[in-house]
Image 1 (cartoon, helix red, strand yellow):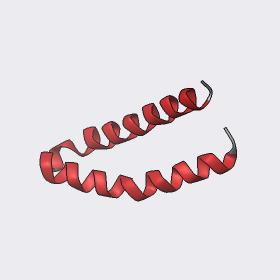
Image 2: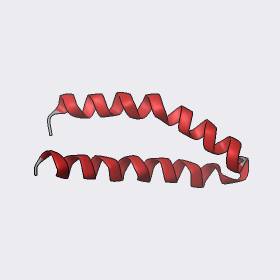
Image 3: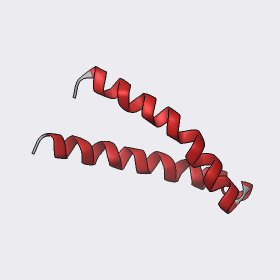
Image 4: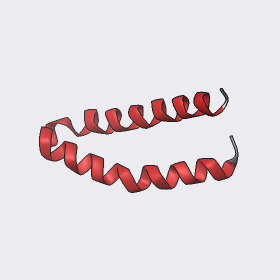
Length: 57
């Protein structure tokens, strides 16, 4: 993958992270901050891996 692609994905990640975090925080509460952060990060990581595979097939 090119560096430009990573920059676009990083911009999307940063734009969506806050919205996802605040929505999940409102749903689950402050006791689950660590789990919410982990879930969002794992989801984006999995997405990057899937997108990379689909681009090369």
